[in-house]
Amino acid sequence: IAREYEKDAITLKKFISQNPSIDKRFQLLQKIVLPLFEIHQNGIVHTDLKPQQFLILKDKIILIDFDHCIDEGLNIFAPASTNYWYSP
Image 1 (cartoon, rainbow, N blue to C red):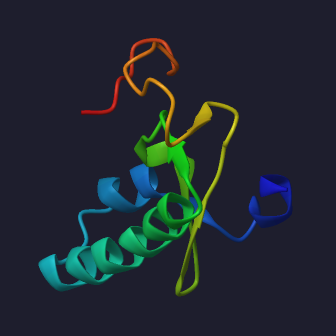
Image 2 (image 1 turned 135 degrees about the vertical axis):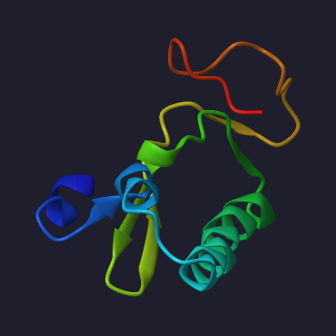
């Protein structure tokens, strides 16, 4: 599914590397919270969050790569992440 956005979207990592203004960063942060809130409301925990998992498409944020998600009631401390990158 992410492939359909590939040519028009940029990753959060690339966005950050462009050194955007504080205002743009804050606006983006507000938009990042929405998909996280939505999946948590549905009992899903994304255990592999990193800048490459967020695509920015115009004024939308798309959270991708759900292969390391777990149900809210499971042990969130079990290892399930990308090597060399662990979310805080």
